[in-house]
Figure 1 (tube, rainbow, N blue to C red):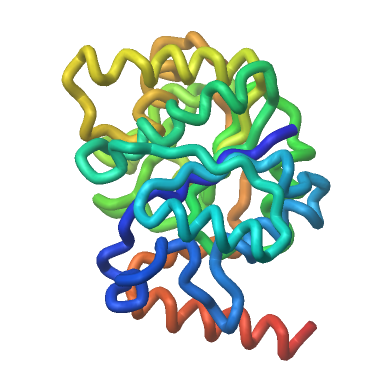
Figure 2 (figure 1 turned 135 degrees about the vertical axis):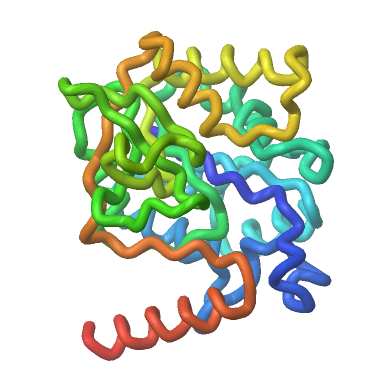
Length: 246
C-alpha cells in the first residue's frame, strides 16, 4: 500500500513561520509536521519510499529537507498550487499511485497513533475516516449514508439532520477506486471547476453509486488540522501532554 500526502499550499495563516518554508516543514514541539506523519506511517507499516508527497510552494526546500532527514519519499510538483483547488494535487500524483491501493491525507494534520493502523486494517474499496460525534456546523464536511451504510453524499452544504458525521480528510482507496477518482478529477478543468477540492470527486462518485464508499469510525482518534498559530499552539500542547503520559 502507498500513501499520498498533499503538501503544496503556502500556509499563509502560519506566517511568519511559513515565510521561508512550506507549511509541512513548520516544527511542532521540535519536529516538522510532515516528519511526524512519516514516522506514524512507518510505524503502521508504510515506509517513506512508498509515500508520495505533492509539493508546490518552496518545493526545492521540501525535497532537500526530506533527503537530509533520510526519508525516501517521491516528491511530485503541483505547479498550480496557488490558482487551483487541491483536487489538482491529488491528480498530479496519479502516475505514482496507479495500480496501487493507497491512503490519502493532507500534510497539515497532526495524527495520533491509532488512526492510520485502523484505516489500513479496515475492509472496503473506498473508505472515509469519519467522526460521528463531531458537531456538524456549516464548515463541517458532512457525510450522508443510505440505510445500508453506504456513502451517498459528502459536502459541507448537506442537511446536518440527514448526516451521520464529519469526514476528517483521511481516505483509503483500492487501486480500482483510485482509478475512478483520478478519472473524475481529470474532468474538473474541462467543467470549469478548478476551485474544487479532491473530496468533491468522492462526493460525485458516491452520489452516482459508481464507487461503494463506506466509512471508518474514528471518533476516539485525535486529529488536528494546523491552519494558524492558535492551532499550532494547541498541537504543541497536545503533543507535550501526550509525551508526559507516555
